[in-house]
Length: 445
Image (tube, rainbow, N blue to C red; front, top):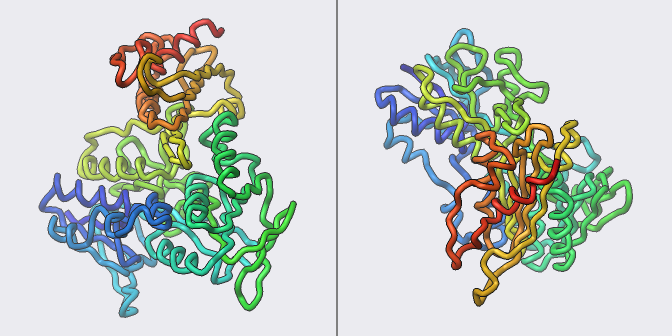
């Protein structure tokens, strides 16, 4: 069995490892246009901040490891075109310039995503940088060394992490976003208010509700970022607006969403026989809404890649879907969320109720305890749990992993009230925080 894997970051690496584990006789060839694989892009801000000293730690595999497992890894090779019906690919060696054709029995699409780059005057300047891969991280660090004023465009997870990283280094930081709050898809206002205050308290300028209209340049370099409401001097700009699936190669050959994410079934199979897709190139089932969505997360990617390996020859293991569970550290606060926020749920036309809990993580008779803010969102009619958020100076983010399981298993607010959690004063109270949220929701009709 001849298998070609296109792309080798999270999903591609997981796919290769599991294919070779389960099918050691398979002839697996990987085509990767970069000079590295398996880079943990979620660690870029930590690398920029200096928390991660050795960037080698941000790679969890290598061409050598995959070769030891039996794969042929072709680095700096770009797939120029794909014929899914004819089962062949046309490839260019980016080092030599040579082109050649290869064939497959099974194809795994793991081409990932690429940052959204809007058409804004000056955006192609040398000091307007992206934040996606290892080469980007090195360029960011190199330019940031001499930069005093840095503007980050986009206040999603990557943008807010980079804003903090630069501020910790003593830079003057402006964080711009067209939305009126940071991370609005993941957190409701009660939580973003806390995070935004932390940014302002640490000297970061938040330009929210502002849309960039121009990057003013001199000699090919941006020196000012202009929005619909103001202008900000900048020595360097980082674009963190979002990501699109990198799937142009497969247009017209496999079914996709209107946004270009490849549609897969519960076994990671595309609409074309013997062609699989995983990671940021593919759409996933979003359980809170029971619909297909594009949610580019590393966690989704490694699960999907693993499932490709298990289902390559015959359907064996079904995907469970996702709640889009995620977490972030913003200064002293650990914040996590899962499923729908209240605002997003209402935008979807769902009649929801919410419970907000502010309590301590441990009994007050203990020498130390910390305040925790927890919010749970549920459907008023069905009582099903839909989402939640948590914030504390203590790391209690794992509660959102627990709530994610509850949402995935279609539990109700009543179930949450009485589900079994342990009690031990060193760790919690007799009623777990999630129990408390469930109990508070019992009387909400």
